[in-house]
Length: 130
Length: 173
Image 1 (cartoon, rainbow over the protein chains, first blue to last red):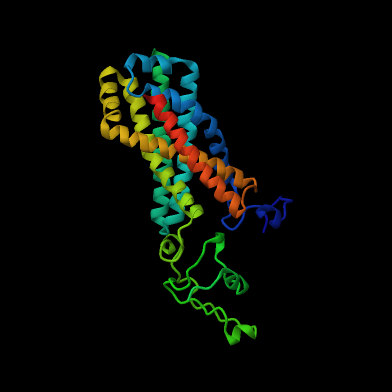
Image 2 (cartoon, rainbow over the protein chains, first blue to last red):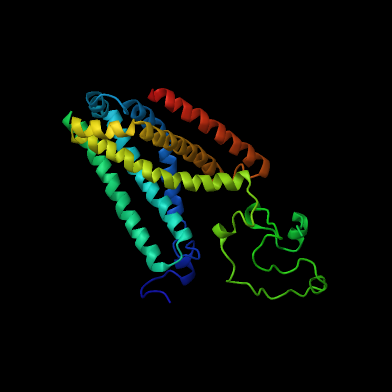
């Protein structure tokens, strides 16, 4: 039964949504973040490993450069988003009990965003204060 | 009794995803493949429907380990392991933002013997997940799904992972 004033047919309303009623949105967003992470990983990882074990001052200098700071911010944001999406699929695959599954999905989402923003804050603080 | 694949296929019981099933290792009764009833076109009711153990449980006991399945599992395992590495990276950045003392503590721990080992493993996991992820993205376009080409691409992923991990190690030192 369609809503009042809707000209869309029932069939059209569920078109493309599949058995789970969600369509391919989650899958598609995971592809988007994985595509973005290919160049971001290449750009992030080498300055990062060179900064490991370096002097504090030189680390501050590296990440006060707009290029390295933006790359690090993007890598952390997109990386944690991808992590959140991937861990959610793993939880949904292996946890059958509904309350446990929902709880884990909620915790995963909140923690991933918390750590992503904490990382972004740290890089921003270095970038703006140095 | 281990049946061959063509027989399984004809009986409509070929395993999904090309995984080879060892019929003698299945921990629940499978309907017989060729019976007089089946030849006459009479199918047995699926008595085990809904009671079968699911995929992760089947592994090892029923499925034969293959490069494809192993690399698929490794993709998941490295993805989950990278959650831990991501926390270490955030911690390191927060320490660097907090000041020289906390940075010295975090950086010292991460570049210690144990921390270094963890980071090297994380680096290998990151490269494996990234490069195998590219293979997955190519599969998503519908290319490279053949048995032989996907096996070759899998070996290439492993080789590039080793090279990239070594390159990162050299860059780090």
